[in-house]
Image 1 (cartoon, rainbow, N blue to C red):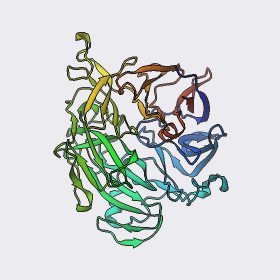
Image 2: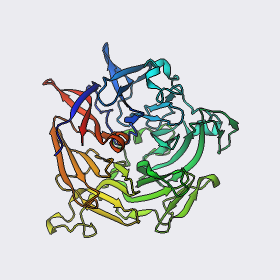
Image 3: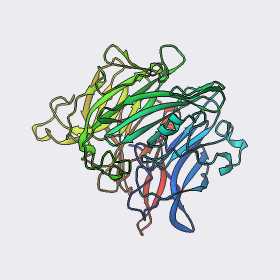
Image 4: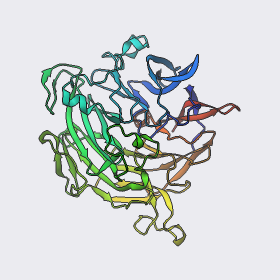
Length: 480
């Protein structure tokens, strides 16, 4: 069993709103370690008033330095919508910190720091002046076509790729959208707008790589985008992995009206009941050519304007029909051997790798879907926890010893559970290593970089504060 964690408080959670806005599985990332410092982003009010909310960015020197927090008071967040989260990315090559925030089918909202802020953190005063103002375009991508693409964004994510930083996002609406990739170079290079823009030599700018996942009367919802800790076959570029589900689109009155906002409701007319299948693809060249299937053939080349389509052969890892309880955007992780781990849920059946009693058939359970380095997929229901339709999402991450940790919230009670699946067991056995109370239902988030390097499990979540129903945004630190 793990010892109880050290708890530090980032700030007060805005519980006066109808919808929570801190702690969602699609925040990649809300907490991240780089160069011996840990960074976390969240929304909170100012002491003077509950509304509006403002982006807060905190940092601390590990292992136990105090949090230093800056507030971007130049941008007020006013929309009560859990989609409109804030996420951060760090470019290893130039030490820039990137933030994107407040999107649900909205124009891009983004800012980045000066170079060297994360590579030389001791040399800078932690103030908002380190960052640009809020930008509605990505540096280097200002053509009319790119501006149009960046005008309808949801679910932005940042992913470190070697010395560079990837930025991915969805355009379109629930059940009817595509996912795109852009690249921020950590060194001087050419910035090229591959969809109708100019090219120029300019450090500190983005390149549009392409639309790697394209929907067809549906949209992909990714569990994540992660790199293998070990290099890809060329010895230089890390392999990128992504898994996703599809959500089929259900037409409704006014769906094609440019002013339509029905899809922005928390459930919307196209809900998770329309999710189907778990799919998988990978790239060994940094996100240009994407591969799938048993033989790993190239199924989409972004340099040629190609995309992975729902009809692309070899992408489906598990055929799971609509109405099976499958969640969108739960979690994925990649272990040190290149094994791919997915957390999601669906009804128990004879196709699960572990046998189920007759009483469990058809029962919705959280499951661990695993692709071994040899390419074999298995799925196993998780013990010790319940998986329910519409319940909060869990998270998983891999330790320095290559063990898998699963952090799972309760769907109704203020409980948080941690399971461990060791590499020694072949990730087939799930040990209950910690359970705590006092955590309102929230999608917990994990600092994957710190767990992989320091063997410390930092969990970003919400916790009750005192007896008056107040809630804090906290970090729980478990030493393994």
